[in-house]
Length: 449
Image 1 (tube, rainbow, N blue to C red):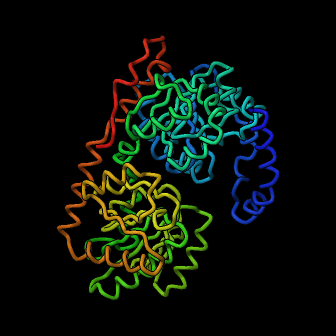
Image 2 (tube, rainbow, N blue to C red; image 1 turned 45 degrees about the horizontal axis):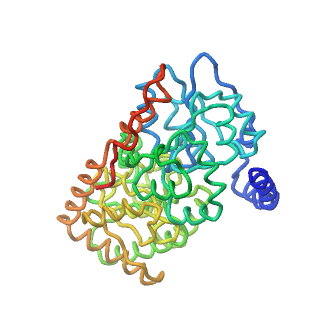
Image 3 (cartoon, rainbow, N blue to C red; image 1 turned 90 degrees about the vertical axis):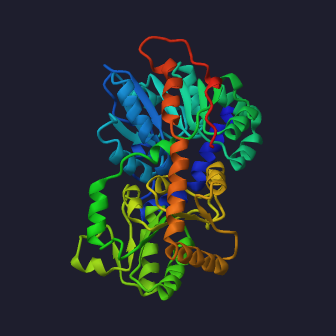
């Protein structure tokens, strides 16, 4: 089965090669780190043990921040190497782990020869895989080289579970290479075990994202943005975070309707999820007729008058959440499954989300149950614009409701913190300098309250 998987991986690579080349030429995707993806990675010094932490993209990298800090504190004798797959994840990892990671590099293509070359260069004592990055050849090679691999902050959506279930027998073999799996919720753990993961190696420790949401932001970025764009109580800010097509169009139209009914100054900041869409979104904003500015441009005195701001930078979004009067979290009107609501919630920003939030289903359900978020009903694009307009106006006109959402969201985030400490306790058995008795993994559970 591994041979068939490797063969199909090669076929898929060749079939998609024209698209890769097109994206490389047009957007610069996939070019960065291509040699590293083929296993040519700068070797790390062999005088210290290495923890290889693999994140996929921005979300996993942000969630890993408290874990990396805890690893550095508890196991200072270890080096930390961080890998990502996407360019945005790579850029963010290089920024947030600049003083903590010995190396940040691209994860290899999942062929055994590329995996072996990377493992030889990094020489990890242990590998920690964020969420559910189950690369069969990588896990198999680690197992054969007796490198323990743990799944941390594990998540397995119902959609992914259905796909994996088609090849359940193969997935059972893949999962046998894991030392243990620390999952976010009971539902995630159950689905993973149904695919063949040993229940004795599976635990539920909660989501690291609750802890990541309370990590300090970059106050320099916050202060600079506040001054540069004249943000404050007299100019409330609506922040549209991690947006996808057609969400920018909907948000801009809603903002136009809101400003027509709101007597004071109002500003909108849009932060697209994918950097390659920055020019596209810039064109949409230009066509809207609003005065606007790009965060990536050199600062100018005229930007204080901008009504719409395009946040076309990497790694600065978390630092502007605290400036927002209202935050719309994208990927939720577009049917992509939603993005992390915990970061804006943890700083007390009232959050609006769309109906498509299956990537964070239990978290959103907990927020809805606590009346700590505004979730829009599913509708067509025109009605969704009207719904978003109504939700924004309702919050702008009701400061008591905004305060209520802030307090309930913060309370929910604080009540669910602690996954980092629980994860560290579970990792002790494979990271401690001397072997210790493995903890009772199933004794410590932290479902979302």
